[in-house]
Length: 157
Image 1: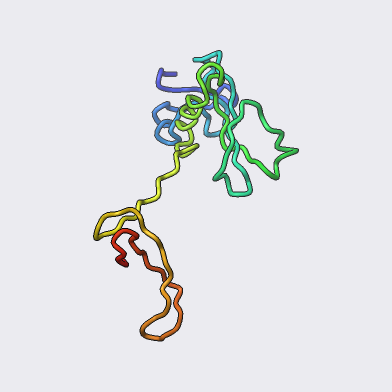
Image 2: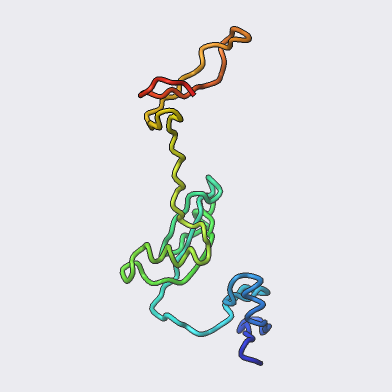
């Protein structure tokens, strides 16, 4: 077996490392049985972390724990997204653990995107208020539309 091949210790199948890197992004997990492909332990002091999603919002909110949750008991609330190895929180801090998690799940604990800032196109002030339109000139009835009004120059846009 060449140096570019890896063998699964559980099922015995062997794969080209570059093939696995291209197919699944890493060569650490057997695509057939899901076992870890290598017995080497690069960081023996690292512990197993568990990244759980909340079922109530399909995993949009999540939690990171260094102890597993009993899914038989709490399976109606949580589901396991990823189990991974990282240093203990006391050794490097939770931010480093989250950075390592993002190598497996890129959008995990991502910073929320900032909402676009609204500003007046005339005076460029950010002091803008949204007010409802009272009525339509065409029908004379009330509408569900809104306008922005600049509090500085009083223009509607």
